[in-house]
Every structure is written in C-alpha cells, then in structure tokens.
Image (cartoon, rainbow, N blue to C red; front, side):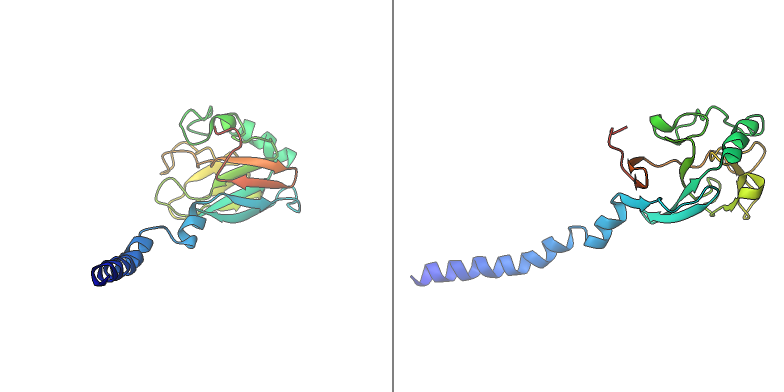
Length: 175
C-alpha cells in the first residue's frame, strides 16, 4: 500500500511539473487569432472608398472601385511592369486584369514590396503611392515600371461570404 501511494504521488508530481512546460508550447489564443481568417463587413463601403483591416499582423486593404477606377486599370497596362500579373502574388482566381474576384472589390496586403512601407491610397490619381521611396501601384496593385518596388502587391486568399461580407485569409475553393 505504501509503494502504491508513493508511485501515485510521484506520477501526480511529475504531471504537475510537466503540464506548465507542455502547455507553454501550444500557441496562445492571441497567436491563433493572428493567423486566423478575418471576416470583413463591406456592406457600408462606398464606391471610391478603402478600409484597412488587420490579418496576420499585416494591414489588408479592401477598396470598393468605381467604374472610373476599373477603367484606369486598363489604361495603366503600358505603365506597369507586370501587366498580365504573371508573378505569383495572387491566388489563381485573382490572376486577371483587375486581380480580384469581383471587378469592383479589390483586396490586397497594404505593404510595399520594396522595403515594407505602407503605400497611400490616392484615388484622385488612380494609384497607391509609397512615400518611402516613390514606388507606385495601379488600382489592381500592379507595380509601375522604373520604381524601387520589385513586384506587385500581394492579393491574399479571400472569399465572398455574401454581398456585404468577405473572409480574408481563406477561400472556400481551397485555391
């Protein structure tokens, strides 16, 4: 009986000592949330407006493009370095002229591909402008020729949950 009690006490002591170490190796709720998809309500987003959301510690832009903005993308083909979006900076379903699922909604990680600054939305000039070193991107996130940024802005995986909601960081097709 004494041996059984001693063994049981030893096992309980080891478990009590190991548990804090083991649990510290699992990601915290905050760490899990940092990589989790983010639901974004775009129902009140007016044409010509941009909102910023945080996903994986990065700023993600959602822009509701006007018809004029959509037309400006086609006009910038000769000015951008990768007009066909050949570089792998977007999911397959966004590998089109507008780099989007729907023509009027553009989703991109708002970080310049040069040194990680956050470009400024310049709707009056139909572009995003990075004030750090002068890089420019059209309203499809395609980088202009002759600027320091080497590649287009990243288009993250995303899907439309409804007309007024998108999910950034995951798509339902698994593309």
